[in-house]
Length: 337
Image (cartoon, rainbow, N blue to C red; front, side):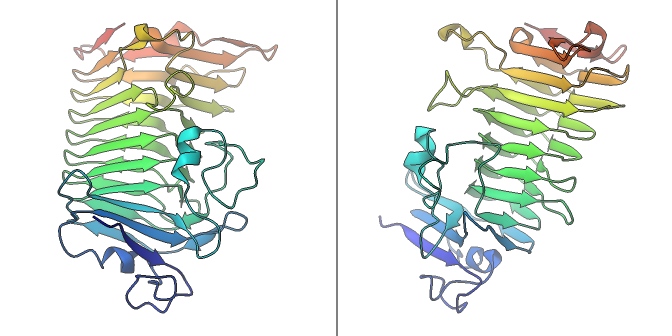
């Protein structure tokens, strides 16, 4: 079946959304055009600019979007009536930036690559199946979070979550797949609960979260996996802090939840950890805990977790054992290699 293309542009005439001329002027407007069960590929192209990203200050609610059939999907991605579009071949090649208008010299870089579309508002996905790629969620001055709830299925690819009011939140028996993405200066990078499942695939960077990098609770699961396209090159979730930190946990797992590092590493000749907790500072507080376990929770795959910090000579050294893994007293938690 033919792909259905919908368009969003601040300069559209806000009518049918079926072309750049007729584009909806808001992301919510394009979402509201999807009123029936989706049986084919639907792509929502949001006008973006690689050299000067376009901001959309709105809260988006995605509710009740169902897909039926192997070819059915709904994807939200940057687009343009000129040059800035998402190029999946570039993305999967992991060489050139996946945005068409990037210069030939602009390399594929999860942390520094510009996202042509910036959403300054919340995106809430409820009882829906959706894919979002190449978007920046800006929570520096306003709510800029992504929330997945009520048995939703979401895939977020090459996204950037920036600011203390930005994070990914997963609830309500939902399944979320986050791939090759960057979390920066959040209060909490990722929060997952309510019997939900999260896969972190490829290279995930969580830098300078103020309270928790990843918080897992209420019988939920987080699994760390290599990227299917390039499993030997992109496989590390790095949770990094710079400067002093008190009462901080890179990973907190409570209430019968499970943090799992993928156990198929024997198939690959990989020397570094699949999870890297890195304190880029020469001092560490007694209240700095890399991984905190409470209330019947499970941590597995610890042999593929690296705990590193700087010393006074600016060298990388292991974080003290007392700061690596902490188990709540009488909590019946389990740690396995």
